[in-house]
Image 1: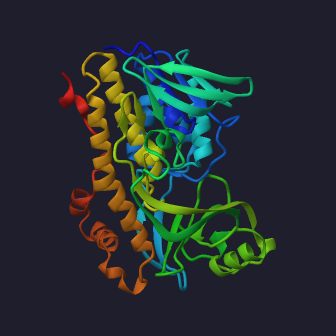
Image 2 (image 1 turned 90 degrees about the horizontal axis):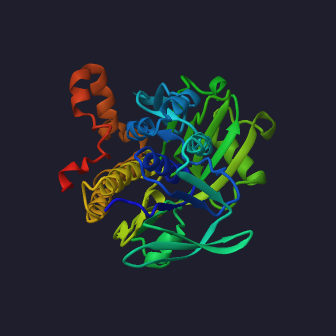
Amino acid sequence: MAITGGVTIVGAGPAGLLLAILLAKSGIKGIKVVEKNSGPTDETRAVFYLPVSMFEFERAGILTDVTTAALHPKSACFRDAADGKPLFSMPGKGMIALPLDKLAAIIESHTAQYDEVEVLYGHEVVELGQNELTAWVDVQTANGRKRLESQYIVGCDGGKSFVRRALFGEQAMPGFTWDKSLAAIDLTYDLDSNLLETADSNLFLHPENAWLAFRPDKETNHWRAICRFEGKPEGAKLDDALKALLPGHPSPEQYTVVRARTYQIHQRIVDSMRFGRVLLASDAAHLCCPYGAMGLNGGIADVGSLRDCLVAIHEEKANDTILDVYSEVRRDKWKTIIDPMSQGTLKLIFSDPANIADQPAFKMSQLMKTDPETARARAPDPLALRYDFSSHFV
């Protein structure tokens, strides 16, 4: 049955807005994106985008705008945190960098091209329901409470997803939380003058005090540092941490902190990404540690898969059981690719540099120098997070 009752997407971050465009471009009408915040996101945490995301950006017609705005990192340098000396490097080819809020702004600007898409800020979902014929969300607005009905509802509302909690309860996201609390610190600092062979991304390896410093965008001397941190990253405690971490051991007047926040890191995924007419995608469905850039990239891959399944239903190439396949496929991609890769990258960063020769990433970097053809053949498929659903069409 064609989708004639519309789709309501909860969450106006990059995943939700991108899904809205992908569905609208495919002829689905009545798309509403509801967001509890009063305006576009100012969240900046996600930065790096891989080929799987750029595939979806191209399908949405936003790739040129995104790549024009983004930084194109040249390399990532793995270093010994004790002295900052390089251990090995990997090329940055195939990856771009752009803070999440800037990406979301680009995507939102493109939603205005589609009459089928309505983005509703200041609409907080407070109740969720469904029956055999339809699904609905009750939203609280400045003008009171109202109900929005649609054929399907998609939760793209982040790690604290209301949609997920309404479906499965407060604790229904199996997995674990790492014992490492991280701080993400955006700052301006002349790192180039204080670090040997500064790369666009620098990963400082240490069993306990590992940290990262990378350029999140094109702005001169703008860096993001990620390190272990307990408590609020502010005042003298933050200044002491930055003096200990940053090459050159600067005093506070030598840098400017733009933003700093701490967060826990998790490896979790729901038991199902479909519950009747309600679907989950991106952080609403699964979480992983940020190292390896698998979080939002995995979420964007979810969105691409969900687009394919909903469009197949709309074009009557598949019935709604393909949404069960969507859930199975995306959970499998998380378990076999996202989870092991993100955990593996974290374990590499928090490893002893003295044992670097044993690390698979180091071995690959050396193979790229001595036998690039073999290295390319052994490299992971950059589109491995995608899936072709056509075999499930009827």
